[in-house]
Length: 456
Image (cartoon, rainbow, N blue to C red; front, side):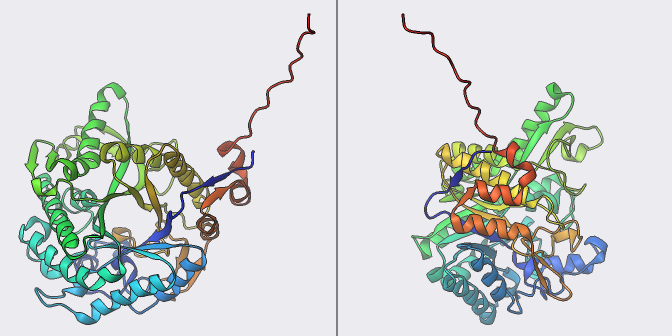
C-alpha cells in the first residue's frame, strides 16, 4: 500500500446530522408521539427522553463533536414546539434554539438548520397534514417566525428533509404517520411539499438575502433485477419518480410524476445548494403482486456491505454516482447532508467511512462542488418506526436512552482524525481498517528492469 493523503478543499464542512424528534425527547405534541402511542413503533416503544437534548444534553454532545474536530453540525427545529397550537408561538422554545445556535458558534461550528424533518404539530396532522394545501401557508408562517429569530447566527438553511421519503413512507407504504397507502395522496403530498419549499425559500431570502438555502434530497442507487432487459424499465420509472422528479422541479417548475404532471412555476430556481442524503442500493423489478405501487418491487442485492434485513445494500461508492448526477443535473454546490449506516458493534463503520470519503474525494477531484459532509449521526437516537431497535444504531457515540450514558466508538475517533486533518491518510486507513488497506489503496506496480541493447 502506498502512502497518500486525500486532501479536501479549504473551508470544507465536517460534521454530523441530527433531527429534533429523534434526539430532543419528551415531545408529546407532534404526529410521531401519536404514532408511538398507537403502538406503531418497534416493540411499541416510545421515544421518551431520546438523547435528552431538550433537557440540555446537546451541550455535552456539541462538546464531544467539537473535540473531535467537527466544524459544523446539522440539526432541525421542531415545529410543534415553536407553534404548539395554531398561531400561538412559544418564545421559550424559540430561546432554546437560539441557545443551540449560539452553542455551536461558541465552539467554532457552522449550524445547518433544517426546518422540517418528518414531524408535524398535532394540530397540523389533525387538519389533514400535507394533503391539506393550507399547510403550505402555515409552514411559511412558521419558517418566517424561526428565521427572523435565528438568522443572525445561521447562514445555511435546509427547508425540507427528504420530501420523497416523507411522501412515500407516510402515504404510499404506510410506515410513517399517518400510515396511508394511496398513490394519489402521495402525489398530492409531494406537490404540496414542493410548493412549501418554494414559499419557504422566498421567505428566507426576503428576511436574509445572504442566506444560503437548499433542501436535503434522499437518493437511492438502483440495479435492475433479473431479467435485466425487462427490469431496466422498472429502474427508470423508480429513478425518475423518486430520484429525479423533485430535483428537476426545482429547476424547471414542472413536477413530473407517473401519470401526472404538475406545474409549479414558483419553484423554479429556488435552491442555492442541494443536499444529498444517501444510504442504500436496491434491486428493482416488476412484480404482479404490487399493483398499488405501479407493479414495482424493490429488494436488497447481495454484493456490498450487508446491514439489517429491512434495509438495502450498503454501497458507499454510490455517493460518487449521485454526486455526479446531481452535479451534472443542477450545477449547484452539494452538501452530503446525511451519510451513515446502522452498525451497533462498530464492526464495519470505519470501513464504510473510508470507502464513502474516498468516493467523495474522487468526485471533488472531478471538479464536482462538494462543500461538506455530515455523518448520520452523532449519537444513537430514536430511529423513527425502528425505535430503539438495537440493529439501528447509527451513532458515532452510543447513547443508552435509559441512563443517557454515552459510549465513544472507534469510528468517532477515525472520523475525528479526518475532520481535524481535513484529509484521509494512509496512516489512518492502516490503523482503523488494516485488513482492507491493500484492496482499497493498492500499491503501485513497478515497471520491470529493462536491459537496453548496446549502442551500435
